[in-house]
Image 1 (cartoon, rainbow, N blue to C red):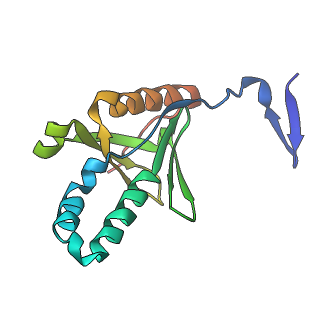
Image 2 (image 1 turned 180 degrees about the vertical axis):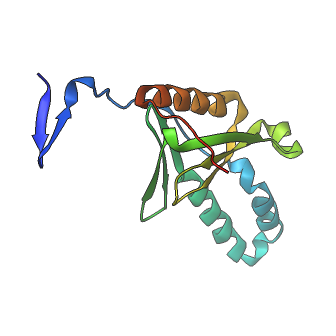
Length: 155
């Protein structure tokens, strides 16, 4: 049967697919190159060392997880915060690769969404060899077909 009654709502659990991780990763530390360079020049002051360490931990602890249904962004060193974006809300995907980013093989992926809490989502310094933007686009199309969601712009 696969039917479960919860709070007067009936949900068909036989058609619910398990959510799988498509890609999981963090930003590259190359995005902090300028900070590391300036902290290296002034390391004799000792304070920049702690500043560089804080930036390293912030970048390392910000995890991006693309699943078959959502994009989860978990950030925080001591206190974790997870933002979730349903993939069917993604309207546009743009990749940006400035000159220095191209040299080291990273790119920025910017999404325009219909989500009120996060209309723009920027994922910085993702290795371009991963093909994150293509994986994201494919998952957006798949979930839109599964949920039968269409984008309509009214002007």
